[in-house]
Image 1 (tube, rainbow, N blue to C red):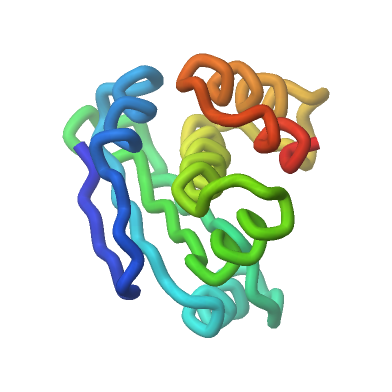
Image 2 (cartoon, rainbow, N blue to C red; image 1 turned 30 degrees about the vertical axis):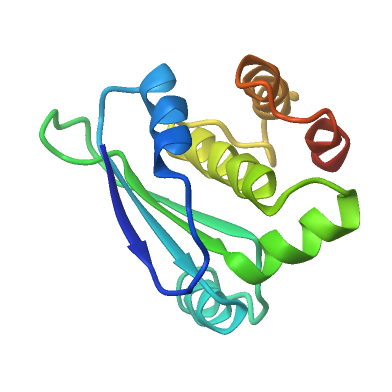
Length: 139
């Protein structure tokens, strides 16, 4: 289950996101949709980076069955910008960022792995019939 908080007026298809989650884990997670200013403040506080970013993931430490997997925070401003830039829908861009953040919660890390994170993203893009422009966006 996704515990959802939307701090914007963007309409989110939670059914599609739930399908992605249940294909990878039985654990609950939190999803928060924010604007660039909010994600910039969170990025500064938690990562010491004074800039907006597309998605942040905060895994819950420990392997306790009753605890959620963690929190994914997505900037809707980035969603809109990248969807326009790459020519796919805002919903598809949101799905990509959600997949990206979810994989971080599951332990994937594109900054240190040998391409496993990107490979799994591409696999999920195909599995959920998302547009190939997301693979280009993801490269």
